Image (spheres, rainbow, N blue to C red):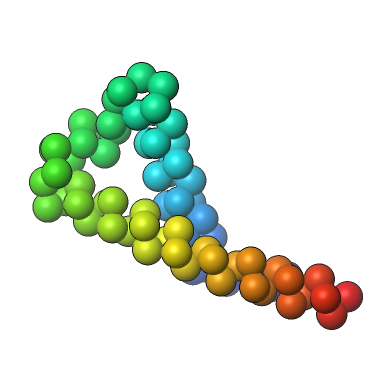
Length: 71
C-alpha cells in the first residue's frame, strides 16, 4: 500500500486524540484543555482537527480493501 504524508499526519493526530480520550476516561484529565484552555478557540481547533483526521482515515479502509483485493 502506498501511503502519502497526509495519511501519516492524519494518523498521528488521530492517535494524539485517542490518547487524550484515554486520559479523560482513566483520569478525568483533558490534556488539550490543560494545554490550550477549556474550550478556547485554540483547543476547539485541535478538537476539530482530530475529528477531521478521524473522518479522513475512513478512506484508508477503502484503500486497504482495494489493495488487498487486487493481490
